[in-house]
Structure formats: C-alpha cells, structure tokens
Amino acid sequence: MQLSVGVWQYRPRLRQLYYPKSRDFISFLQSVSEILTHECEQDINADFPQPALAVNGVAEEIDLYEILGVSNTASKSEVKKAYHKAALTSHPDKVAHEDRSEAEIKFKAISQAYEILYDEEKRHLYDQHGMSAFEKGAGGMGDEVDLDDILQQMFGMGGGGMPPGFGGGRGAGPRKPRKGKDEEQKYEVTLEELYKGKTTKFASTKNVICSLCKGTGGKDKAKAKQCATCGGKGARLQLRQVGPGLVTQEQVVCSACKGTGNVFKDKDRCKKCKGNRTNEERKVLELYIPRGAKEGERIVLEGEADQVPDQEPGDIVFTLVETEHGVFSRAGADLKAEMHITLAEALCGLSRVVIKHLDGRGIQINHRQPKGRILKPEEVLKVAGEGMPLKKSDAKGDLYLIVKIKFPVDGWLKDETTIQKLQELLPKPEKPIPAETIDEVEYEENVDIDSQWVDADEVDGDDEDEDEGQPQCAQQ
Image (cartoon, rainbow, N blue to C red; front, side, top):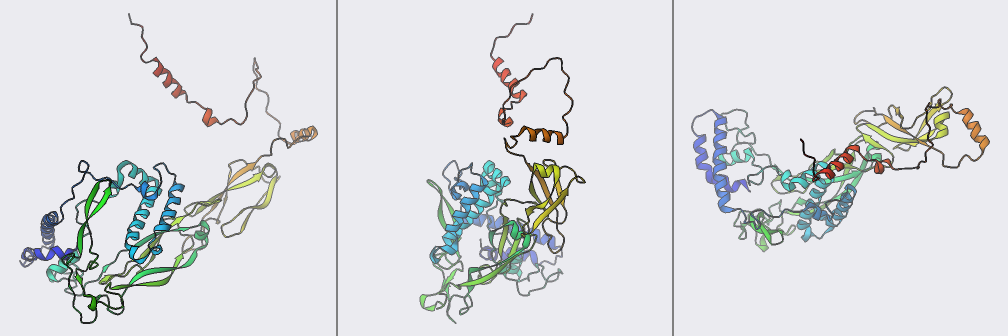
C-alpha cells in the first residue's frame, strides 16, 4: 500500500491535533496512530475487500514440497539436490528479459521452500502448522508504515520525525531516500575455503537508473499523464489461482506505469530506456569471505542491488552455507576428525602423518613405546592450535583426533608358532571364573544387537494386551 494514497485525505483531522499548543508529543503520536488505524482500515476494507474463499472460507495453502518437487519424507540431501536443480533452471539471469519478473517470483518461492524444508526446526513447524507458523503478523496493511513518511506528508517534517518546537528534529530538511529491497542468496562454501578464506569475482546483471532521462522515463521537458490502467494509484487488483478451483485477489504493481502512476506517450518516452526509467547493466563484483567465517554468516555487498528511482539501492546479501566435509567436522573454532591406526601402532606406538589438514599440511603424531602408553579405541587426542582460525586474529581453535583402530582381518595368523609367540608377548588372561557347573555353548558371530534386542517393557506390554478381554476369576 502506498502511504501517499491515504494520508493526505486525513490531513485536516491530523492538523487539528498538531495546531493546539500542546507539548505532549507522545499523546500526539498516539492520536495519530488511532486515526490512521481506524480510517485506513475502513478505506482498505472498502477499496480492497477480502477475497471470497472457496473451501469453508479457507484457501488451499501452497505446498513447499511441491515447489521443490520432493515428497514430504525427503531427506535433507534430497531437498538440497532438488533446490540446486530448481534454482538453476529458474534463476532470473537464465531467462529472457520479458520473463524475468515471473522468474524472480518463482526463484524467491524456491529459495523460501529450501530455507524452510532444509532447516529441521522450521520444517517441523511447517509440517505442523503450515505457512501460518512463519507469518509476521496480521492486519493487511502491506508494507510496514514509516512514521517519518506520515509526519513528512502531514507537516513537512524532516527525517528526524519531530516537529519544530519539540526538540530533537532537524526541521523541514531534505528527507533521506527510502532504501530499496535487498537481494538475498545462499552461497555454498567448502570447509577448506572457510579455513583459508576466499576471494571470488562474479558477473551481476542489475537495473541501473537511466543516465539519459535521470530516471524519469521521458524526454527532457516532456510531461507525463495519469496512468489509465491503475487510475494513477500505481497498483491494481488481480486474481491469482492458489489451488484447483480456488482464486484470491491480490494487489500488484501496475505493469503499464511500473508503479509510478504516470505514463508518457510513445513519442515522449526516453530513447535509451524506452520509458522504463532503468537500464540493465552488467558489472563484475568481488565477494570476499574472511578466514574463519562460519555457516550462516552474511556477506553484504552494499548498494549493489537493483536501482530504483527515488530510492537508495538495496544490498546484495550472501548467506554462507557450509558443505559437508569428508574428513573434518566443525564445532565453533574447533575441528574433529578420525585418526585411523593399526593394532600394532596402538600397542607399539607410531611416528607418521596421520591426517592431511585443510590447507594441505600433513599432521604428524609421534607416539613411541615403551615410554608412551597404549592408544585405545575411541580415545581422543587434542592437538592445540590446529583448529579453525579466528577472524581478525592469528589464534586458532583446537583439533580433536578420535582414535580408530584397524584390527587384522580373519586368518592373518596361520602359523601356530607365531600364535604362541604372540600369546607370550601379550598380557596373560585373567584367572578363570569359578563355577560349580560349566556349560559349553554355541554362539553366532557379527550379530546386529540393535535389530535383535527386545525391550523387556515392550514384551510385558504385549502380554498385558493379550490378557485383556479374557474372563477373570471372581473374588470371593
């Protein structure tokens, strides 16, 4: 909703609040809010009535799984793969100029679906409550109302939001232009790139204000006329299908005047931008990812989004997404990895490179016998200062190595003499457990205990279910 459409018609009532010599500015603002809320709600309900919905007053909700083309049981990797495929085919830079608006809408829907379905917590909320779980609030007012806009249109106040005489304001100085929308994208990075840092260049195609007409869309001294399509409002109502047999009304920017409310005749349009007020421009941008950056961090390229007349350009914002690594896992500034050694190395010690670090260096461990001690399975070794670098610092986190012992394969000992020598070298077994009766039993090897184990409580529960419905003995 354009604020300028509605505020001026309430200006006489609002001026009555301002002209009395009252210094209670808080009461003044409260009164302004009450008038705008009451009057605007009535006008919105009259001009833009709520759409009639088909199924018990509720419209069918858009299915995020359907947008990505996956089932509701899809794994995170399947969701990620589907997102990459859909984003590649629907990216605005991949389509013709006349189809870009539709592609941008589809691309934003794909990005929103991925953001919700890839996050386990958000996905759970969506599965339980649908998109209503992510609504920021109700009220139908569209864009957030800016108090500076209200006061500027009523009294010509400056961006400080304070009228003359109340203090703290800048008077009737020039207003700061409203900032345009930011363009947000996800950017995948490897753990190596986060460890070493990365600088990459990429080409960006964006809209820039026409240098010939300075964003007016018309020739010099040409006068625009009110748009006949939207009646000068810059927006119009249209029907949108939200499901089989279901439609809803929504307010969209007028395609004829591009939201300005005015149009030029064909002969008066700017020759360079053809009345569009902006032209496409290709620019090479540089993206810098500092050493030690984390997943979820936002890299902002200020003012590099599309330019819109009378607005400050928005930013291009990249959100870092860390790809899964085959060796290391990260927790803050620390790294964790498995260290695979042989049984002989666990018993006798080792001195070799056990792992290759993210920058290509080999990490060598010296663990010697007899002075050293035996390395045990799942034991954790801490290597200080070999974790992730800390941003704006030379310090690093720590590296934790989890010992994994490779036991010999079956049949590697075939000589009885060698077996006897090995038994002599290894610690002797403990004394036999005394028992009056001894049974020699048969056994199975390599049994999956998780699939075979039965909880006693579950067995008791099944017995109780079987007893239900059986005749019981009467108590005397």
